[in-house]
Image 1 (cartoon, rainbow, N blue to C red):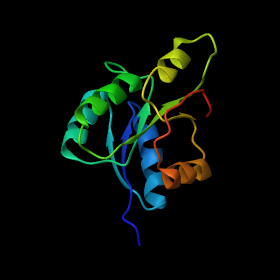
Image 2: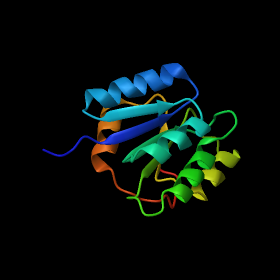
Image 3: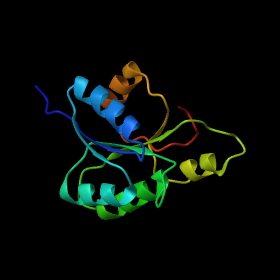
Image 4: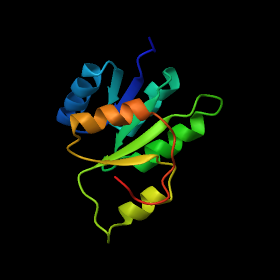
Length: 134
């Protein structure tokens, strides 16, 4: 039996954190959550995560900034898979450019489907984006 995946959820909306936690625990993951980037950085320094689900639109520090800061402090640790969550992608938005220029592995549109969540967790591999496929 393999060890449960350790997941960090970073989202400023408590309902989103609750739903994601419920879904991830239902498939056997160990989950911690943070309501902003600063809390996420503290949790990341004290824990080793397999996957980080981070909301793009958050006050103080957006999801891309969180991912960049975590990547900077994760030297020597195993590679963490980063997924940015957003409610919409607009082709005129700088969001697409930000994501493609970042070290994000996947974009996930909210609301997240349970089966999609299971597939994401089971495929736990770093695959930096070269195009925006959700």
